[in-house]
Every structure is written in C-alpha cells, then in structure tokens.
Image 1: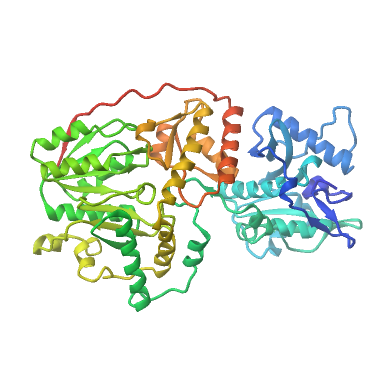
Image 2 (image 1 turned 45 degrees about the horizontal axis):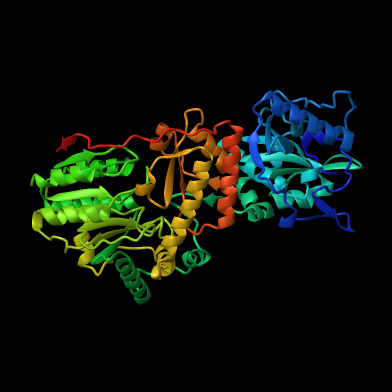
Length: 588
C-alpha cells in the first residue's frame, strides 16, 4: 500500500505494500530516506481552506481508499467524501498545485475509536485534557520516497500545539506498526478489527514525537531570528557540561577568560556579566546614569530606542528624546545641535536598531560626545558580534550572550569605560543585583552564575578571534536581501544604513505578516513576526545570525518565494521618504 491506513477510513483496509518503504523478507518495511530521492521543489504544508483544496482531498481519498485499497465502491466522479468531512480539518502537503499527501484530524466525540473500544481512555498511560483523532493519512505514490510523510507529522505536531491538544489517537494497521513508531506513535489497549485486518490503537504526544526517528530526521526549526540563533555544535556540547560552582577556581578562570575576550573584541576597558537578558543590562546602565547625574538625551529611531526611554522614565532620569522616523538613520545634525546647547550630561542610543534593520553610526555619536563633554551610553545588545564594534570612548554599553555572539540566552553584559561611582546615598538607592560597582568590588562575581551558560559563551567567543564571523553574517545578509527584493518585497532600511545582519520587510497590506510568518514556521523556518510592534506594522524580519548553513538559507528563500507568489503578492512598493528630525520631547 502507499497510503497509511488509519482510523475509520481504513477499517477494511487490505495492505498492498509499503509505498514509501521497501519490503523486507520478514514482511516488515524499511524506511528509505536517501536525500537524492527527495522531491526537488519545496513542499508547502497547509490546512485545507478552499473548495479546490477539498476537491483535491476527495480525489486523493478516492485513489487511495477506492482504487488502491478497495474499501469503497467506485464512482464515475472518482471522488470519495469522508463521512466526517464537515467536521474534519485536513492537513495538506502541497507541491505547487498538486496534493502530495494529507491527513485528517477531528476533535468531536464520538471518535471512531469509541465504537471499537468502550471508554478507551482508561487504557491510555496519561489522561489528555484535549485530544484529536487522526485518520485518512495518504501520500501520493510519486512522493513516497520523499520526506512528505515526516513533514506531515511535523505539521501535525505544530497543529496540535497551536490548538492546545495534548494527544492524538489513531487506529494503525498492524502491518505498519514499526512505521508508526518511527513517526512517534505509541500503542495502547488491545488490537481491534478482524482476521486479516487488525488494528492497533496508538497515541501521539509532544514527548513521543520528539523522541521519534521522524523528529530526529526532520530536525529542529532553522532559526532566522535575532535570538535565539542557530548555535554551533561545539557551543551545544559546552552547554551540556558538568555544572561548576561559581566560587571554584575553574569557574573563575573561565569567567576571567570570557571577560578578556569580550573586551578584546569590543575595545572596552572592562565588562561585567549578569544572569539575565538585555533588558537587565540596560537597567544596570540606567542605574549608572542615575548615579552619574545630569540631564540626558535619548535617541529614538526604532522600537528599541523607544524602550530606552521606558528605562529612563522608570529610573526617574531627567531626559529629552530626539526622534527620527522608524527605518531611517538618526538625524546626526539634530543630535549635534541638541548637544551644542550645553544642557545634556549624557547621551543614550541604540547601535543596531534591530526593529527596523538600521545600523546607527556609533563613531558619529562618540565624536559628538567628545566635542561636548557628554557621557555616552550604548545599547549594543544586537550589534555585538554582528558587526565590528569599537566601544572605546563609550562610558557604558549593554550586550548579551544569546544573539550575534552565537551562544545561549541567559547572560548579559555591562561594558564600561569609566570606574563605577561609589557614593553613599546614590549607591544605596540602586538595586543590589544591578549595581555595577558591586561587580567591580567582587572581581566580577558577587552572586551566583551559571557555569553552563558561561562555558557555552566561552566556546562561541573562540570564533571571534578573527573577523570571519562578521564577513559570514554580512554575506548571508546580502544573499537574503537580494532575494527578498527580487520577490518584489520592500526592505525597510536603506542599503547605506542597513544593519547587515537583520532585514525588516515592510509587507504590502494584502499580505499578513502573522499569516506569512506562521506559514514559514509550519515549514520549519522561524522568522520574526510575533512581536507586537511587528504585527502592528505588518513587518516580517529575517536575521542572518548564528550557525546558519547556506542550504538552509536557500531552502528558506525558496519557500518564502513560493508563498509570496502563490498568495499573489509580487509587487514593488515605493521607498520611504527621507526622514528629518522630529520634535525634541521633554521627559522628567
């Protein structure tokens, strides 16, 4: 057989072979997964949405369960409509306009399993809160030596997760039990059926799928995110090492080495590590600005610049903002003019504005601060490790382990070019964990830290002993940007001001960033689309960071191109007009 008989659709199935598998002499089937035999065009996985989709389902259903496995009477229309058609959700594998494979899920009781086993739940090892029945799994004969079957099961796993289902059940023919186990299904209860057509009740959970051969073969999603990123194998191995006490000599040596590497790659005078995200590091920087005193100027040309104003406001810092249009560079003449007024003691800005894909000019900001005697604070959370970053002349800067540096989320850094001020009242007002002076006075380790996160970071930093990571990131970015623009999509940031590690696509109104991002995720490619500011503006983001492989980039672009084309969105949008300075807004 070429289809996989499951549930009510195959109660009278007669197997005629294994389809996507080779017969062994014992009668078992051997999975074949030679990548040279895979279908060349990207297979798109989707839920049946249109009448045409359901027509394709009816015809594949007929070919499978009438012509190939003769369970039903033939008809002139060569269509087979399932008895639960109105209640089924069909998960499809599409090769262009051709249906390569399908399965049906249904969550309405009674299931077909209820007719076979009274109170079948009592035989399950765990009691699910929500479950579906899976039936009508079929793969077109032309696709039975491809990854379509495994792709369908991965898509099923995503469907169950999004629907908050914790289990799927099937009735699987005993002729294919080894195959179901490869897919993650586990048996429960006694066999059902009759002589010559026995079926094994089976269940699928997230845990059983992740322990399956199918999961290992299809691998994890490829991350095209600013973070978390694809990590190198040596970084993953380092993360899995034996934990060390943060007071041990081994930990202290590794901690010192990591600090040395971070300073060497950034030209910073010193750096301290904290357990937390970039938000924590920026709060620690705000604490230093509070201690330093004076009125400041916060620059905004994207979401993360906007968040700096939130930090400043929460810390009750006296400050003004100077805003430029999202997607455009900072208005440096406006910055200089504001600084020339002499009322600002410090300046706070984002280096790599990830939300828009704009790289702000750090050298110009340092020059302004030198000329007018201002302290400079920099959010380097996304740019550190993505582009060469010179923090000499910067008073404080934030960074993290889990983005461009290629390690895991969990450590953040505060770089500094000045000794932290230690003064009675001001020091007492700072939260203990965010007080950089406390780290300075304790050799950088005043509190507990994770040796596993530190070891992974140490392994990741070895790559930055040369400039190769920056070149690789920029090269991948150019490849992605050129392909995206060839699709007729508009990249928000002008090329001359691009952050060469992440691009923000301003989608046309006819194309939903949520829908496109989710569909890409269903194919195994994680792009950025779920943040509120992205959804609000209908933006989609693709990052070129981490341990990405060229073949994965090409596959991702092929799938993206197919979605753009099939959804009819090939159009070129006008570029954003040149931005000018906006009003300076006062905040206290």
